[in-house]
Image 1: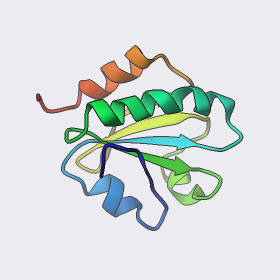
Image 2: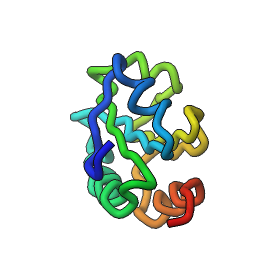
Image 3: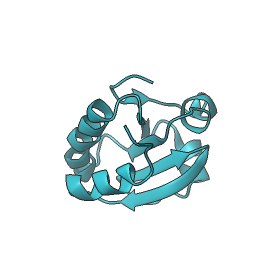
Image 4: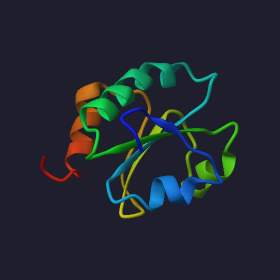
Length: 111
């Protein structure tokens, strides 16, 4: 994955989220979700600042409901951090940048 968040689908979920060697932060969102727009710049910033140590993906739950259902995403935004194919951190709702960064960096390898 690149330093930019990558849109994932139900079809490429396993390859883009579960298989990478680095942790993957997935932003579950929908176009109508106002709090999702608040979190989006924070997610982009994390993708840029932790490029190479963290992959960032976005999943539109309206278009890709299977993956959202698989992880019981019931509110938006929901951010789940996957490491070695397993969810290790979950944050629901619009959160401050510092809270999200702490949750993510706790699971990253040192630079």
